[in-house]
Image (cartoon, rainbow over all chains, first blue to last red; front, side, top):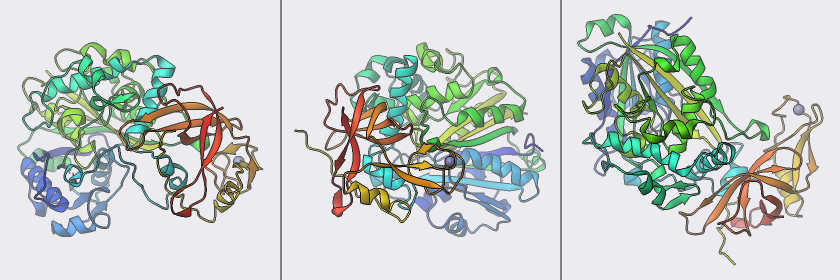
Length: 388
Length: 130
Ligand SMILES: [Zn+2]
């Protein structure tokens, strides 16, 4: 059994807002759904499967499915943080392959910018979670959890702040072409390492933006994809996993991508060298470096060297990444970057990315994300897609 | 003396109340499994290594080594989160206090120290340079 070829991404839409003071979260979900269905050439009444995660207001998928007045045969509210929506594409393909639905809608939305949430503030992720009483008192937030990974990576492998900065520099080169991006100025390595330290060793410019917004995807059965007037973006492989503290055997040098990545490549029957474009979750610069290693784009410990000197810049380097500007420069709606990773990969495979960043002959693309905290416990999801 | 961050009270439950009760007497306990012999962190009633339900509280030395550390600069009171590898084996998330935030580093030897928590909660274990 495999999901290879069982489903296609027919609709993809990124909400253009980055500051939505005058809208509700539910409204942003629904507006994103409207956009993705219009992109696919389908209507609300075609939808028979719905997927959302913890950013959706209400109990699981119920409130949003009711708001949009969907008639469903299949529901899934798997929540593994920011990479949930990458998992949702795979779950949608599984549901389609087993006849549970034919048109799956996935939505994400949030307004952390309007509500004043940032990754520097500790927050309880479930008061009754077994780890909360031990860890919340430390002031663990988002940024310092990732910063501990960066500190250990530097200690073990000699990774430098300048190497991490190259990730941001590459994202900024792409964001200059995106009119919706929050940060469109091209920055230099020096600017990144001279930006204020937030949580050592991470600087302000090592961190993604805080933005309001949303996104949606429509995943459909092959016969429906072929009936639509959109380029065919086929799901060919997926993997998911998680990693925690292993009972105290903490190892911050790798992520759960060491499991989700190989599973996705095996299912797709491709290798990292076959990937023409990669969307890599960039909550922080270190996130990209670790995931690139764990997905097999370079050897463990070599990520800092790999990303340096523009190697992630489209048209310049070996691995064009996050050509929309990513979370570092474009958008990080709901503090969850998974859906925008799939959306930009779909744009690349369709040839609909900005001409300045469009990868030539982009036939195979990857989207990968983490959810939760890389430094404590996190989910990982990898998706490989092919232009048919 | 640097002004320290107020620490939220840990939410104690029946599985963990023995730890927090000992903490009030300044005793640092960890859990060890009598089936596989391994210690673990955070403390659980079911061993995360072998799934035995025979875990017991044992005193720990309170000594360890910093595995990783990050100093939070963007906070009203600067503080350091860290993972400390205990002499008994497990690595735990905690804070480093009473240290030079510009010098605290991976590999530093540290020892447990207790801090009061908000709302009359039990003392919370942090670490300071040994
Ligand atoms: Zn055991």
